Length: 129
Image (cartoon, rainbow, N blue to C red; front, side):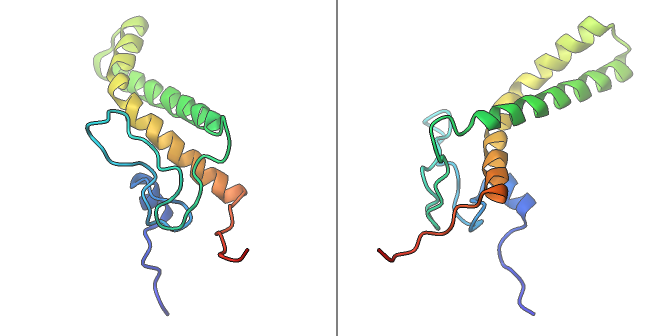
């Protein structure tokens, strides 16, 4: 029995790898450019990451849901730990969440691509014309 050398889906999502080949990186790594830019296609298998204009609207919903859950959990931990009032707890939970917003945006895009490929996979391109 031969084992698949590709990372698991969970590891591939965390590493921001292509959902089809799990080798190519979704984002270009450049610290100097600020916000990481996406490759238009997977550098390994050619999967098109942004299928159409407005494609990542769904990623915004994923980002919003995860942010809401994270802020709620942070507020709950603060409230249980410090017994602050509701207003102070919520304000501090939001302040603590702000540094997580950027990585969450990238994660939401990766999750959206994986979700889309699960329900509507793009077939690998063939070299026949």
